[in-house]
Length: 371
Ligand code: UD1
Image (cartoon, rainbow, N blue to C red; front, top):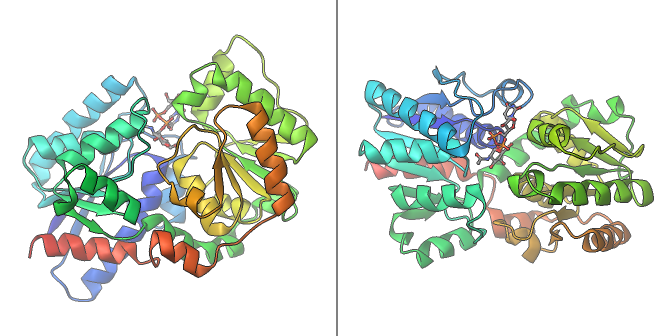
């Protein structure tokens, strides 16, 4: 069986890694062999956002690298769509597999749907119910043109049922739990980020900020000032800065300087991020994946958004939404620091996100699709 897996952005490399391992195990186990042709769209091209993930996570080298790069949503998605369609025609796969909710996901989904090639969506059914987010549009469209919907959670299954898509869905569990489970010990043994940055366990917070709604609007200045306040008055922050955010700060009319207690660093790889989050007093973020990694690793998370697609992290008591409101942010920081870390038990991670074997279920669902 021939698959064509489309990835392009940092979170997709993390999701692909467990599935690639499960495909290799499936092939060793003597099932119908699966050949996976990996396509890297080039949406993320900086080595710190791309190469480091392939190296650390041992992901097979992409067979096709499209090198599309940055652009407006329309231009980027359209260029990827045309290039992926050409590869589908040449490679003639049995199924296209897309991951998550980026523009690479949408382009791969549309290319497969237009060419009538069966399409599987890993991480189907997530909804923030905020259509102003580019990712929400990508998720909804991708789910509706997919033939096999691999949903991480019960909430995702419910969302798919509400859109009459449940007949094509199967609950796999969450591949990001697979990734955390597999890599946590590796992070402890390999990452030197704490000593490099001179950090002690529990003495700092981790900050990431890159969503368009926060970086491309007046919210950016409000958030950066409030976060400087958190760093100076409550807890020092480590801020691996996404290039998009750096570009928005550079282009801004006002000059922002990080406080002395805020250490702005280059984007970091997966193992360093796991080590940082695992030892942090709290996490401040607008990323989807990091909310969940914080939950799974037991660091209280404060989400700098008005909504989230990972509602389980809130139901499970490990996350709070504060938007871009400085007062709510400060109150949440004080509360999180007073309550301390609350490592989830295996049961709470399992209750929401599966058993760390989602990738195996994804590979069986894909083989099962072909009977
Ligand atoms: C994309 C995804 C987002 C995901 C994020 C993970 C979409 C709509 N968004 O956002 O869901 O959470 O990836 O990081 O697909 N840039 C570089 N180097 C790179 C890549 C980007 O400098 O290697 C800069 C460029 O200025 C670019 C900007 O970042 O214009 C935005 O990049 P883009 O890929 O459009 O979106 P992300 O913000 O990375």
